[in-house]
Image (cartoon, rainbow, N blue to C red):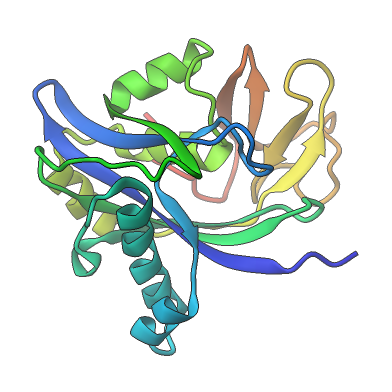
Length: 235
């Protein structure tokens, strides 16, 4: 069965906190079929009003969608014109629901009030980007690979303005992962272009590694011997 790919958009809302760069994370209702209980960035489907604002440019329509969803889900209103496109992800083939998702970054005032919708979103927190990664790696803050990799991408910045400036100069990866089953915890991994198994799904094959996999309830990004660029700069 062919699954339609729906356009969607999300925004990484950043602010300068006392301890450094902070990001707004919201928790999806556990009852939702897609990513229920996971920590995400505000976002949702691109609608007709967004397309009207964006004209013929799907990137621009997604920009307006991300800003609108931030308002609807979290009561925060980033400036669409100032937001920066970080990446674009398409849900792997084989999933029951598939999305073509634009991920933007936007800065908001440190005192911005957050009001969650109480429907799709049941909780929120402003959290230091580095701390969010520490908590995830400790088995807390469950999230999907695009969320984890996006946090890794912005973790190298100290301020919201430097993050937007840096991402504005960084090429935007457009990613179609390949999802493959694995043994043990997690049950699957996502492979990215350049991985030896990206075309075949054979995880045992020797060669370049460009993948994310679950271990101890957290994601690990592996990038080794790959000619394709990484999804975020490596140390």
